[in-house]
Length: 404
Image 1 (cartoon, rainbow, N blue to C red):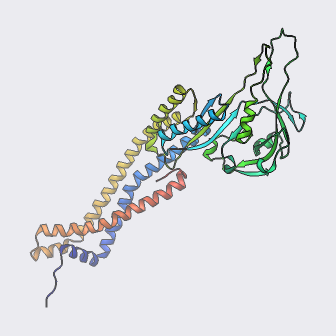
Image 2 (image 1 turned 45 degrees about the vertical axis):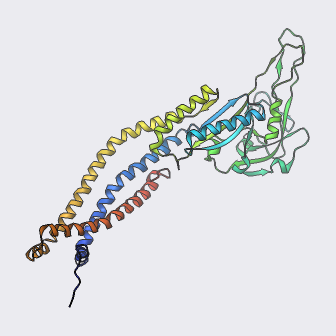
Image 3 (image 1 turned 180 degrees about the horizontal axis):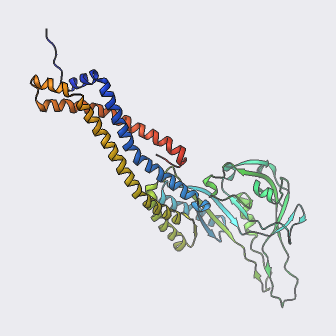
């Protein structure tokens, strides 16, 4: 009767099946060693990601970038600034930063009246800026009232909306009217003429809202402020910020400011700890381009935060390396121990095969094939177990920013 001969690999599989308790113990041992060895760099990486997230969140609004240009009083100037600034940021940072709000903003204006009652003087309402947020309605939820397009405003009043925080601070409710004093001009004292008239900018409150998420990068890390207008109304009010001085009357104009700005926030799903040096270098370059080349404000606390993060990471690397070497030594010792136990269990079979004429080389290949088969099963199992273990530990201990 003809019996097909087994290949060396086939014999190795048969031997493992026959000695399955020993093979299982070897499999578990190597799996544990691989899990331990792979967990170390994964945990270090997760800790670095968590450290980066904590470093950026610790500086609050400074963790975002605010680009702001003064004297932006016309729609054309505003649009040109917004488009050119976004182009530079996208080209330099790619997906490392996500755009936040684009806005227009005036300098704070003095309060005059609230529902016709005087709110000036000591104890009166504070100054408030007038501002415009692009696409603000998609980032907020309505608390009271209705948006200007639906509610409408009385003749002579500009429709506005405010945040719930501002409404509570100065006791505003939908339907209220509020007037701010526009900048005026001043005559020299030796001109015996009456003071210039005060012109108000009056508003009708149509809506009160609150941000859907205060942590939305749209807000740049800062709570929304000011009387918020739509685009058309905002630029109409801007035109009235510069007072009309009568001809042939020496006068100085009360200063006022009109700004265009935009926020950018780091995207921690895309920006990782190893990217910090590159981002820091690019930030320094872009900050110089805006502040020096364009004479535009570039406000951020990110460079200092990233430098501190890199310094702490460098200090932690040495300690992490010592731990990593120690644990790797333990893992290699465990693998060697498992290998020795495996070979000890093969001594009787080896003696028998040698007596039957097997060469040492062929025996060595058989034993190595058995060990390789076990290792090929243990390696992916250990890696998967390491990844899942570190993922759970990182999420529970280090927080959501600890990406693996």
